[in-house]
Length: 454
Image (tube, rainbow, N blue to C red; front, side, top):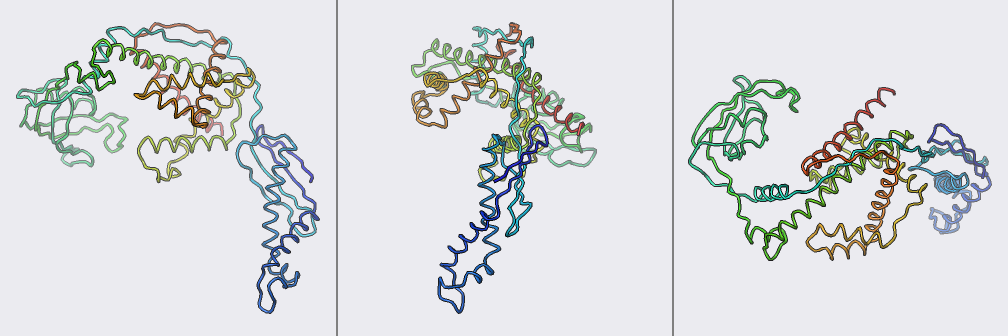
């Protein structure tokens, strides 16, 4: 077998393989002899059909079958011989495929890029310094009460925070527009769930009132036929309801896993959960800054095969998130919605893998167990979660990958200039959320920039 490799780009290789003719012909003949034992043709007994007849009848199909198998087999041997590290499946095409001639085929494939890591030395990283205060805990308890609140009809005008039950229909001029109508719709005033100006104009209405509301749709409204247009809504009010917050008693507290209903234990549990949540937010904010610095310092080509794999994974994730069902064909979702994020993820994954390799990072079984125990604390039956994870090699592998990623980020963080910034609990959560949003938008801008270059 002769092999030659042509480098057509940083990550693309064109591998030409030649297989001696006699090797191919011998394999075809052996396959035909096997087939001849079971061939049934009129005028011949089974197994007695002349080889010339068998070859004439089945030779073409058998050769194609044998050649397909040989190409797959020799491709694996060729990339092993040439120490190629393919990213995804190759495109294999025979260029010479005739009896009596050496078989020649070409495999075009992408390989993993060679990464020479550049330091992120000097990168600026802001690390929120956050303390969960008693006031934060009380605010969270108020939020939990509101989430478990009931609504009670009242005989008064609606105020901010009240819930109004309404029928409404929207008009552009004198014509009603599609999607602008609902009956018995519950709307909390001040929730900002409707277009700007709508809820404010319902302040002061009472049950039985009928009124008209004029609003202007935002210029960037998702329905283009309504964007920037002035509309009138005819509204009928059925009911005004006030929010009734539950008392912080034993029954309320037991809903959150504190079985004895003790108030101080409940507050301690809330604070512990908030501390864990904000700790994760801080870690994620620092991590995103480190990874962004790593990407900026290391521009590498990304194999399209890996991008497509990640795109498909994001599609499945989106389908699950929006409840589209297990039978939903994710190929219906356009690649361009996910491609930029997928490319960014692949780039980061390749770079982190190199950080782990260069620094010889690893995770022991004890570290995996500790991490699983930390994760399990978020559930009501931690031991069941621990046993489930530690008894599943795939899940243990995922936890190990998470630990290695954390270690890689910590290693990179030592190269950066870290500045601690005082933040409140709410500010830290909002900052982490905003950074994730900014990162997604940056990926989209990078994708548009690459398209412009193309």
